[in-house]
Length: 257
Image: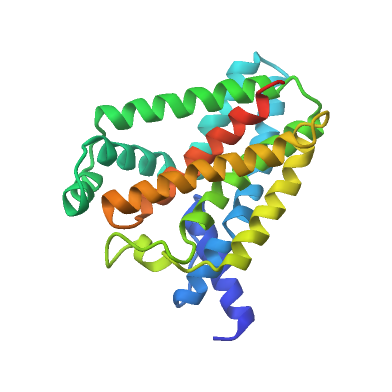
């Protein structure tokens, strides 16, 4: 496949996997899937632009917490709620203390258990509270913070798809993308998001990059645990990584020293 065709297919795959956009994707092979997962942080940054705009626009006419709640709702809408669903399914499976196929069966169930509900409430609450705090900052810092969080969240997907991380099932999204991202691509994405994070806390330029790296370290720990419990990653695990990293970055960016 020509490189330009592969890049186009990868971009469409990344957009249709990580957003609400129903784009048609051509033939998808492992190389295309790897490129798509490498582009995940770019998709995250693109999502951050309208989200930051919504936050500031709504905050101009109502309370910061209301604006934050609307922004969180729009984020769920723009991603079809798939990442939140993945978080709930992953936490339910981990909370069951089951391993292997038994845990994977729990992830397939259409209902959400108490562990999943608790995780959703906690994540949405922290995100909304952090966004409400961000509203009071200068507009450039607000945009940088939201873009950093959304890009870092999708960088969590890139991290989960790095070489050496297996798929839990022989089919599905996890099987397609597991182990498809090389170290150079992951490092490049990490550096890019860390540089973006510098502007998120203008008076403490170190804080944003440190928060991004800390959130990714937590995600790496989750991935190691998931591989031990499930045997590898699934599409739900990718969604859990998105929400975990996004939430931790939002939280870290509003912490004051």
